[in-house]
Image (tube, rainbow, N blue to C red; front, side, top):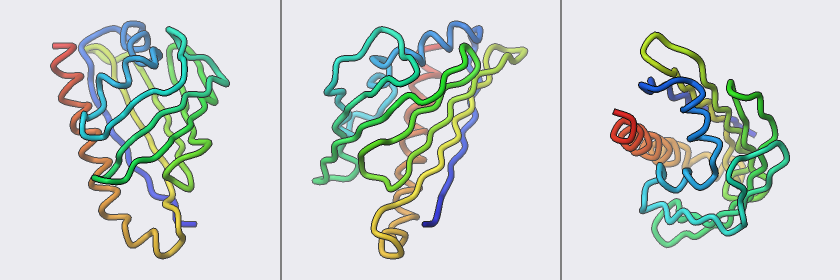
Length: 150
């Protein structure tokens, strides 16, 4: 299994605790996800996530391809990091770490995603397309967060 990774770092002009409060609210995920991804939370979610929380979604990662996705919040250390891991979905492996640390201008937020594609070697033929799509998703998120927290 080939494991790919993507790392994104963004500075947010707000204190760590405020950034944390925004990101641990599952409802806010839809705000920072591109509309064309067709992201819909299908389970009930609390106001704030906790370790062991299971969240179900539907997504349309590519036109005409709708997928169910189940993630678990596997680790939380408030207000420093949390991890979401796919339990069922379009990836063979999805492990997304979210880190928050103080920065002179606010909060440095780092996302580190490790993922593997399904279908073995055949699936890896699509790795450049998937990487480009993930970059588009993070680019959209960066813009929305910049607009929200100017």
